[in-house]
Length: 467
Ligand code: SAH
Image (tube, rainbow, N blue to C red; front, side):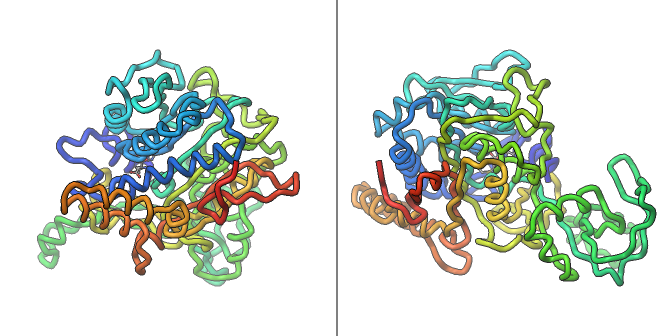
């Protein structure tokens, strides 16, 4: 998944798309900020409510992971700029983006110069540019959040919209003991190894689905039709016969997976990179948990480098934060409570398609496991609490989407704009079986305040504006 989406040159997001944009009506998919400006405005207002509730701190870092074309951040910053004292408290805006092509796009929209200024090689921040909306503050780009340094005194306000669904998953199936032949090898990236304990005694076992190439059809075979040839899948999923390092480790990392050990054929999806991001968010907000061991990490270090890309801090370095501060808002699609199953999909020209055709030309995504992200965040930091997930309809309606949209509609200059505005906001909260209001969810990571006996629910998660 990672190779198909962000490998340099040929990844779906990273390739230079001559004349083809991934986003929008003419592209492959449309996201909420591209549907209606109200979406980003309400996210900006949500950040403002957190800023008020947390005592109007200064040194705010606005961080977005996977900003796409930059539309969401444009609406967020434009909204924030109307709250003068909040805007003044912003130190810098950070965009975590793997695609050089999209980084350029973001600079065009968000910077007052429209250009990326490259920093010297080795600097964890690749580019900077002055913000168009927040005078005096810089926009800074890097390709992974681990390159953003942790600062004890800064307050990160993090947004992740349709980011987690693009992070790679591993898929496992629970195979009944009766169907498992005793195996004496484990497949590793460098070849099979023999476990010291000898052949494994068959019991229910998690087996990983692996992507394997499909043999091309025999050109002599007259039964294969031309159309099938054009859309032919080049890869498919097969169940690995032997355990893999991931199948031995990842399903052991949560009681939710363990509870399925006695259910033959259960399928679970786990995205270790997503869990690393969630634990990073929590650590930035609440400080690290010195006793945490359960969050699997795929990055070389759970802690970012402050000096250079090649010398990350040790993952055992504790990050103490005297007072937890900041927040993370995660908006994406996935089930409210259950573990995603069979959700890897391809999207091309607004239609679902096989994820195994045309690698690098098809968008790939998988449902987000919100409860797994919450678990990872809570394990990573004793200084945070998690609210949600709640359905997008509930979140946006609590923030006043109807009222805001109606104001815009009443000011629309012509019938076409009025129709677009009305159709847009209603689509975001649509509660039909496949409506965005129901399928998309919102989840928030905020500082833990329970110790002082108070409970504060953020706005959009059952709370009201305070501060
Ligand atoms: N948030 C935007 C775009 C979502 S598409 C919107 O809602 O419109 C996913 C975005 O995440 C793209 O910008 C893509 O380039 C970026 N991305 C995907 N995988 C990434 C990774 N592993 N690291 C950093 N950015 C990534």
